[in-house]
Image (tube, rainbow, N blue to C red; front, top):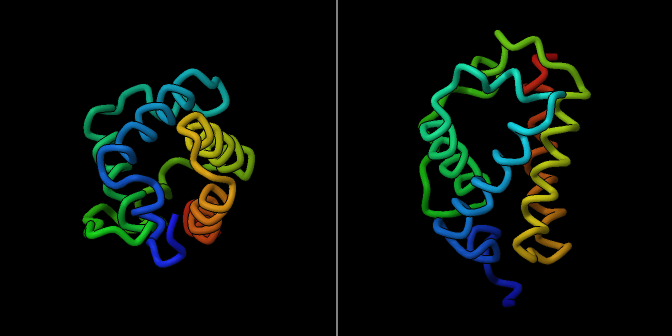
Length: 121
């Protein structure tokens, strides 16, 4: 892997990111800690949205067009344990696709930087 590659390229581009997102939501929707937040959600749309988001934060040629993090999550009354559960599932999904540790940590770092907005603090 070239050190000049973006996270997006290290992750394998849109198709591989979409596969990671599918694995991620399979894990999330089977976890009682967070599954309830997704019960009435159009999961096909949510998966597409997350693929776009992850591609964007990974530096890909993707423009994120979703709501701002705080606005999107404010009605959910999320707690740190919810954020941690989701981060754990993202970690597991990335590792299920043999994403190198360094890349997993970089992606999780990008997500962790959003914790205050996601938890509306």
